[in-house]
Length: 409
Figure 1 (cartoon, rainbow, N blue to C red):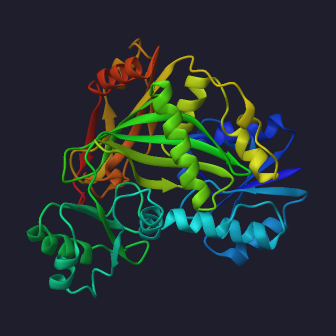
Figure 2 (figure 1 turned 90 degrees about the vertical axis):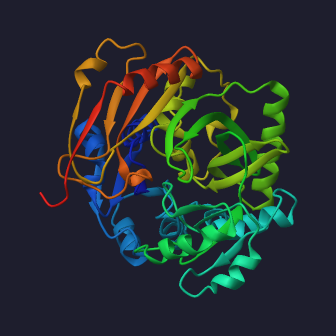
């Protein structure tokens, strides 16, 4: 049988192809731009899959392309931007698929905050507004300070602003009006939570939710919220781990999200857990690789089970960390055109076997340094524990240099 994936994350395509092959299936990648996967394809994934070039935002084009795949048994949905087209195509072809309503709720940050607040999972609702139409004086009176303003459908730390006091609102509105595209068409003002940030990778089936592990996450200094480093898995005390599992399970059940992966970012405040956002997918960057390395499993096998409409074997596997894994997003220090890395030779022999996963190649634009558009690579390293892995990767990243040319060259 054949399994189709409609776009995927930056990394992990090789693991997905291996998972399909292990189950005796042929993997097809449908993509608008195959160059997005150049690292994976150059690493050998291209020989394991079949690629169809198609406008993956066009449901009609997707359905036509999928119908042309012989013996198609399932469709895999892995990303934010292409979630709804993938679900619509799977539904039209009568293939197994998740609840589009539940996925849409989790993807809309404003609706999700209101949903959480109404059910006692968050301390305050959201205030959703159009930055171009909003009256600044009225909005200023509506908001509680400090707060965070962000795109209701944003990702990669883009279009996120900290509003500490009412005097910060006017420049934030000015900045928002200059944004070329607000993905969700609106912004949401949400509570500002104080405490360390984490993310939980979960898998659900038939209303049952399992936490695969929790990652620590460090951010750049405020007022920006750029993600800088991640380590996995965090060792929570048993009682805290159970409380977290029960809390996330209740939230997902309340949203009708009964099957599939989630990447739930949360803060542990002085008053307990608070959701930052819930992404209805596996975590991006090298989260999948971290799970693979730390737990000794190919987490992508669960995508094959989900696509076929069957209980993922991962729901019942014994999971025990055998090591730790950590990653650092490598950022350019100025905008322009990415030129090259230096210092890669110094990674050889470094503890943790650090490995560089490039996101940009020579000549690619670096449009920002305050969000993930400025990331040029991800550096990954291992360690006996998540803490030791993080120390290894933080030491290794200091050896690298990132060179950028001015944009007019």
